Image (cartoon, rainbow, N blue to C red; front, top):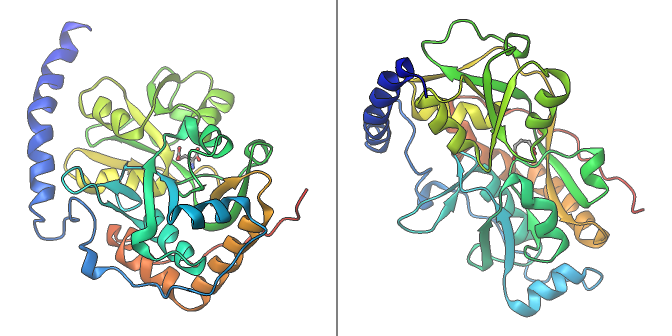
Length: 306
Ligand code: GLU
């Protein structure tokens, strides 16, 4: 590391815990550090008569007595795990809970397991998880490996920089800049393919990228706007999201590739939860806390079994 980067890094390291502390104290207008309190979240009616014998995944989960759902644990408002209680919270977590309830599994029979972006397909293929809800973009390449119910939300790739950065406004400004993203993610791949002059750095998670941004190891973090807005809201004096979203990232529910019965059941459940207002209630209690009002959910892409 060169000498002149040392001082800002040391300052950032000193400041980072203070930033987190300020957020944890919930000062006026700042988001709660660990998502909404359980009593502020919607309750989802459980369909106790639901049966899905055509789905091997559902049948196995029913015998086991709970669903195992893959998720993220370090994405504010979306999927966050409280290290003290082990409780997961966020919009993705609520989506998993409401859909599980429609498939006959009450909230306490959904167990979450953290799976990083690069490991999602393998986790679904080897049965480590029953399904996955964690900012998971539906695309043609991934559809060769897994199935997708949804989408349930539309995000777009964006950029997070330090407040003192004034020369990065969009992806075309990334030439020669150190840009961090998660391995195996669509934002990483897009920078690699379309902006080859950027100096790409990959980690397993975006929170490690954000630590690297705060300590001047990288110049920008890139992933979906929904994710970056959460990090910026937790360190509003240090970080900002810049420019306009430059991709479409439709979030799907990942399922094992051949379990079409599960995929269609999740599509039906999602449609019903959008219609009865649960989707919006969940959004308002989680992602909506970032200050962005609830959008219309995108149309569900019920593609045929192949
Ligand atoms: N939605 C993008 C993806 O699925 C980025 C977020 C993530 O890595 O989960 O790759």
